[in-house]
Length: 476
Image 1 (cartoon, rainbow, N blue to C red):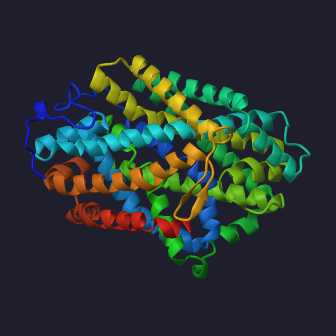
Image 2: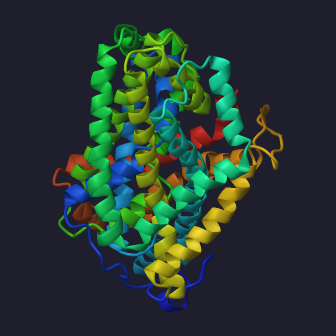
Image 3: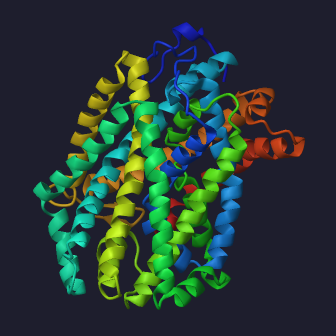
């Protein structure tokens, strides 16, 4: 694609931000360690707790893990490196970054639309993530006061149904979570987001470690380890391989603009390859620890594994109630989920905040207010999808019954994220000059750089196209 306009005259989906053709983000992370914590906090999301354990247990345990680690090497690490690199080179919002970098090499300014897709995806995920986080907020308090003690499976299921079908209760917890997120975001990078990740990410890792020790004392640890780590390739199948590829993309928040944005805050001396490996390692270890904890608790409590909301809000409270110190452990678990959601929400809203500042010259606090009001209103629509505004539709033959909640999940997870990943890989591999990429990534070995370059040029786009073309198989 050839550029047909000067940088100052470029316009795209969002118009031309004031600093689109020059560096506009001035703040930096205080150290590479903070970037690792922030990016890992963004990557460690709900999927590590209510999807990854189910995938690992359902598709052959160690067999799925082997394929998944291979997908991280082929997709996750190279694309994370690419997004962090592009962000640091552009030093602006995802929209401004891609417009600026395209202008430098006289490419099409409409590459900025890829950045716009990331901003939109992150904002949409923030809205429905906040609704679910409201549930974990409520369940933390319920576990603390022993609200699940002595309840049957039907009783716990009834409690969850009452929560999601009661807009007033949901609205309180949802608003509380959104308010806490936007208050931290409004304080800026160093005084808000950085302080949050410095405090919260180590705390959630400590909680995870404590729960892992607790899981080792339950009677279900042996069965859990066998289920999760003994390879059984007969249960892997093509569905297991496809799910491994999709999870390798989704678990790191790639394609959402988050890593582009966090990369923009990296200093010139931050070792991006090393940061990427550490983020992927933290995210993977967290997912494995979560799987061991969850399966150990379920087996010790005599509850069969399930996935999604039924796992977190019904099966686990029942299992915790059946084992010693389950009330304390359950409270710690739901507090952990709330903290995970909070640092993820801070990450997903960040690109939109910076873009508002670029495009309209808004202060950080005003941008947070605009995002907060818009996100809260859309979140209310999502929240009502579980009760008054629910509607059903079919997607690849599967009936979806949760209205806008399902629509936004499908739009982000199955369209914007994989398509954004494909286009960002192509941009990093074919538009940015290899000499620029080599210098930015600091890969001294020619073999390492060539492996990264051809991964983003060919391997990642090809694999993600296969994922997008296989949606019918995934949903089946």
